[in-house]
Structure formats: C-alpha cells, structure tokens
Length: 214
Image (tube, rainbow, N blue to C red; front, side, top):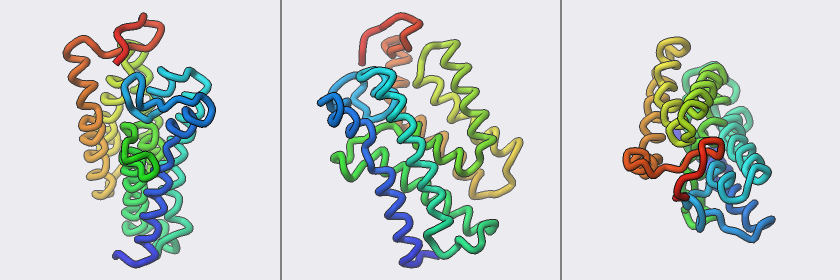
C-alpha cells in the first residue's frame, strides 16, 4: 500500500543512493572526477583504477553502506515497521533497496551519471539475505582470482544469486522475483563490459598485467 509515509521512505532511500561517493572522494581529495577517466563509471572499481587502493576502499565501503542502510530504513520509516516478519515488510525492504540502487546508477547529485551499482547492490543483498550475499562474494572472488576480470566476477556472482536464493534459501516469491531482477540488472549495466570481454579489450586487475585502459 502506497502511503505518504512509505513514499517518503522510498524518496529517502533514493537520496541515500544518490550520494556520489566516488565523485565526492575524487573531487574533494584528488581534484579529479573519476567519470572522466578509466571506464567512466562513478563506482568503486573505477575509483580503485583511477585513484588507488585507499580511495577505492573508502568508496567501496560507502557504496555498500548506501544499499544496506537504505533497506534498514524499513525499521524506522514506513507503515510496515511493526510487522517486520510480514510479506509486506519484506516487499517494502526490497523497494527501498531498489530505490537506493537507482539512486546510485542515476544519482540526483551527480547529473544522473553514476556507477553500475554492484557495491550498492551488495549492501542491499547483505541487508536482505546475508547468507546468499556471502556466497555471491565467494563466487565473485573465485572468478576474479581465476580470470582477473572484476566485471566478469560481478556478472557471474549476479547470475548465481537467484540460483542460490531459490535453491537453498527462499520460499518468498517477492525475493525470488527480486533475485532474478538483480541478475538481469547486472547484465544490463555491464553491457559495455560484455562487449569488451568478447573483443578481448577488457582491462584486468594488476596481477594479470595491464591491458589497454578503457
């Protein structure tokens, strides 16, 4: 049910997501807009690439927290907070997380030019189902170590998420549908990465040697 209180919560979640961590850190401490370098994305991966480990780690933590805290808004905002085990409450948590994710991809405070949303999505998944999120992180790390591609690790982990949820954890239809949407969204936001992977032009992490910076 859409009430003014619930709509206000969704708006706050979008504002959370719209805080452009990579842009803020880059401009404030390095006088650099990371969107003008590397892959052009305002996300943790490009921050690592352009500004280094310290800045990348800060942006990663901030982006994960955006997704996590947006979901947890359900406990303080909205008309379902007294029914925390109800399907309506879970649906509202998912809606808050999606709003934060949209805010990261299309940030109000950065000209609607954001990142791919992987870190923010991770925070969302931790808040919704930390066990499945942990498995996805392990899948990501295995693929990253084997291939050296951050983008490939993100996509494979995203594709594993609905499988993990449906097979091992959830009987809630909303979470099942959401998990499929997550997988699709990750593929959509990584379209250019897919093209570069197929063309052999995608950049790898440092221990595999540098390729052409995209």
